[in-house]
Amino acid sequence: MTGLYDSFQRPVNYLRISVTDRCNLRCVYCMPEDGVPLLRHSDILSYEEIYDIARAAAGLGINKVRLTGGEPLVRASLSRLVKMLASISTIDEISLTTNGTLLAESVAELKAAGLKRVNISLDTLQPERFQSITRRGTLADTLKGITAAQDAGLNPVKLNMVVMAGVNDDELNNFAAKTVTDGWHVRFIEVMPFAGKPPAESGFFPVSAMKQRIESLGKLEPVLHTAGNGPAKYYRLPDATGTIGFITPVSEHFCYQCNRLRLTADGKLRPCLMSDREIDLKDALRRNVPAEDLQDLIRQAVAAKPRAHHLAEGCVPQGRFFSQIGG
Ligand code: SAM
Ligand code: SF4
Image (tube, rainbow, N blue to C red; front, side, top):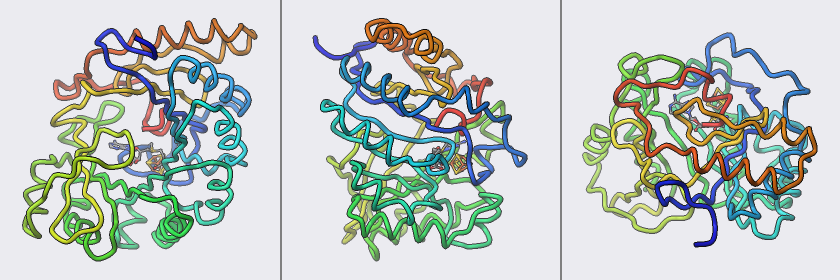
């Protein structure tokens, strides 16, 4: 077999790279109101270091890369990194996950640098609610980012909504209707407990209940092939040009098809989002080890991927917030 396979014969070809732990928002399900203790600038990987890791990983079979954060667009000149990654011939897709607030001003440059696709987080269509969920954002900025990404041709632009009971679940059908009226591609995500907050306190709203509610608009027909490599299952409402995806990290975990590694902004490779195990690549990089040694560490991270997480049994990682890992 060529390429990277973990101990459970799952192929691993996808690297999520967190380029910063900083964010201009403070979403209630992701960060505490006062933010999190920030990394020192000297602890954050430079673009050159990220490039070295991506090149070593590409040499082993990683061919898809997603940039995330914190908010990736708060880091200066992100398009420079995109361009560097696009120069690695075996990486065939570079994508971005963003809150969209700063996207309108940089999307053309990012596209020209080689960005192929973008996922934008959007949890509500109500301006005041947007402020209360993000604690400091403005809905109009994210909507402007969405339009700019669509106009730039980064399609399909996927919109990620974290659904929380009593917070925004009453907007499910408004989002779903947008797949018919505006061709939106939306993905509804079950809120994951973070930093010890159990599901009951995070407003957990299961996908089964989301589907039931959306089906009041029409029957959801499964869609088999959509662009991307995520864990979502896709459906379409009658006459919709857009799709509806469901991501069920809690109620029905998709670990059996997990194909990814995560690189934190401070250079730790994380075999699993939901486990605190990490392998330090920054230390190796800064000791100037040869690329083969970096590749050995990447193989170790792949070998350390657990079969599955244990969220449903209440095992929640304690080490980092999602904003520090990249979601
Ligand atoms: N700042 C960017 C954004 O918001 O898209 C990228 C980083 S954010 C950590 C990546 C994704 O993780 C977002 O789609 C966000 O909604 C999701 N996320 C964060 N905390 C979550 C939680 N507790 N449960 C489910 N999804 C979460
Ligand atoms: Fe920032 Fe994204 Fe976390 Fe919201 S979800 S606080 S935008 S990192």
